[in-house]
Image: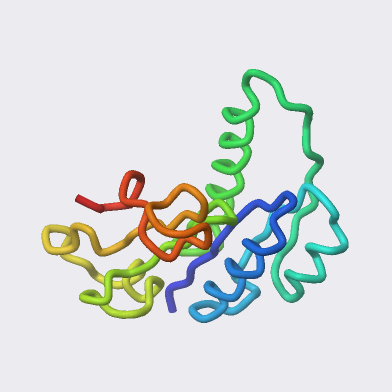
Length: 149
């Protein structure tokens, strides 16, 4: 059976982590969720109980901070592909929603055989705070959406 790991990173984001966990545990067991924590470790480990949690130090910000962060996330996600068929990373304030025309389970869609010629716009990234909707991200972030025309 094909499997998916889903990865995020959290720092002072209680509300978003709660939403992120609640959303993804509908589709995969918590054992497939990976939460990188770099603040208030015990609190976030409790929130993410039964998930894989990884404590990391929050390094001081510098000119290359984002590049370093993405290199680390890329390396971790690449390593997880040795154990999972697919690995998804989203920031804790983002979820990936499936266009209802293509079903209601983004994991089935991602793992299933998809004719890419007919799937344009099927997956949409919803990001809180930057989207066209309210602060909880109930409307798609069209500007950065995956496959959004």
